[in-house]
Length: 403
Ligand code: SAH
Image (cartoon, rainbow, N blue to C red):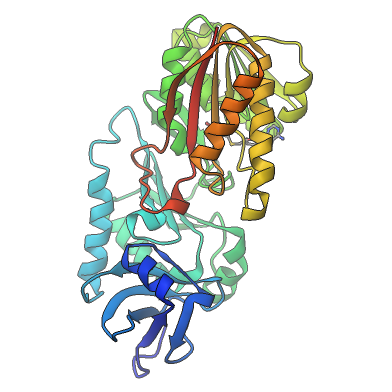
């Protein structure tokens, strides 16, 4: 933390960055900082002044990241104290009142920048909180954050997850490790929670992201409503989220396709967790461990409903064009496997690919198939994953029916 005797960190930005920050954009890149009164420390609160020397906003400074400043606030001057942080946390929790409940105990409580907590995600799985940090700016305030979360929710335990880029820093500066329990009861395995009445496990200690993809909840629900009497292929199935909904919705068979044996084992366990649901018990559950791109283009199997939910295909801007082409050929493969009246559900979680580009790619594949089709729906983010700036809009999904 900064020494209280040193002056506060003051920044001035380029005109474009000033404009973006004023309109609420949360990232200021290093090259857009025009003036700085001294070198700043990790996580230090910095004040941004505009070209007329008027207060513009506040942010958390990160000397080692290309995103040099993560904005917390833009507008009138504010005092960032205990009450301020408390109010900010409460606002995120209040935004989600009514979204969970006795049937849904897995919920995103803090969605990073979109909730005013840049670089931080908090997911709740039953009584376990997963605190995932994507930025080192929280490390100097780590105990404060944990105490505040613990007091406000209150959980049985808090698990810390760290993105790869800050793991060394967290170990060196705070002796913190990815997968560490930072509050409450020890945990050796997975946590079981409910989503719309279905039971799922989340591998909170070691799984991808926070252990489960809560952002697809509404799309999974939708698939459940479309699945009655159908044969379903769930490509990039992970732990079988879409499959369980399809099975409960009356699918006659579901096939999980994933490259990872761990993911398929998790899907098996999730089916076992729900075997008391008659429709789930009756549904045939198949698993295929394979590269989905290869398998989809070579199989002779056919399905009534095909779900395509690959991992991000564009991790950086330079991969954007390649990802658009990959989405198009993936959709083409999926459509080829569809029987008459078949439904394609295609999703993208690449932030670098816009909704327009993704929907365009899937629709091109549909047109190229020369089969008549109708667009049923386009969806985006789940309500506990709000979006407040363009780069945060990563999830898009389109539903097409082929006659
Ligand atoms: N639809 C899932 C989330 C999918 S995450 C849900 O609702 O929870 C993406 C999945 O794709 C991961 O499980 C990963 O193992 C898998 N995957 C990544 N590359 C793959 C490939 N080339 N072929 C098949 N599966 C792949």
